[in-house]
Length: 369
Image (cartoon, rainbow, N blue to C red; front, side):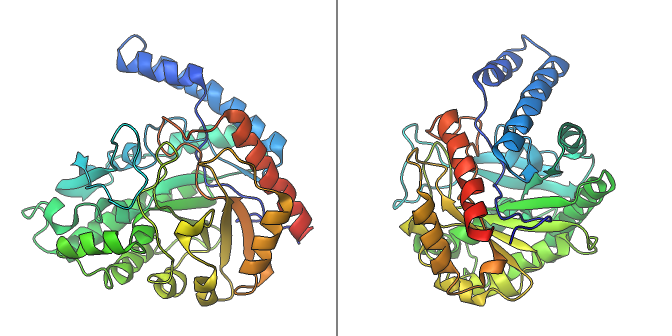
């Protein structure tokens, strides 16, 4: 049956393709041809429009499409005192490479971590003012500050001991989640590439080369996320989205959830899991056997990378396959990722995007009533 609380049977990850006039405005701002207020006014108009489109297609929750961001994570994390961007991580030789040679940026910690300002509150308040359904805020997982650089990317003078680093990072998130909740937010999604990267043999080997134990990291990251969520109110739904890369329809990691499944589902204190399952890179549904009662899995069966539209029958069949491992009542449906994890967007059209979101809505209606 359908449900009136998140995650919804038809849900989505968050980012949406930026309209051309918004991209033009961001370029004008970068060239100092318009100021921040003018850019925000254009963003406001674009967000109001995309909220209406999400509601019209039948979605039960809406996002701002991440229209105010260039990256799904950097725009947020750079607002924390002590965080800097210092180049990219090494490319995974097994991954589908982007034509421009892009690799994910690496974050460094160059001083004490502090939540010195509200980051998403004003954006949430505007989103909520435009919607008649539930607004969702997507923010990067705190693990993003650690995995891509490890100990070597964390200033030894600021943090001679890693326990203090993890505690300060968690406190930054507790502070932001508190102010979001006070502003009315009741649905938050943590976007986490790193737990998914730890499914990839090459990424696991790279972590070991940095001096991290790839078998221990999932446990440490579960502790970090749980600490970040400590004290959250009972009526705040938190999901985590696992992603293997989503820049211009490319990807950076592959591998079954099996290496992290037990930790993911039984140590991580979240309500829902948005899992990529759009192709063979994510393996089969067997790791879902670890999902306990009381937690939901949002199956990312619809590709946000490719234009081809999945059929209702194909999606229903795959949902049935997943239901062999976790009860159907604990399952929902979504695209496998956002459509625009960076401002450049995936290599599909806006028509493709809306057709896929409508397919999610209609398939959910058929499967769950």
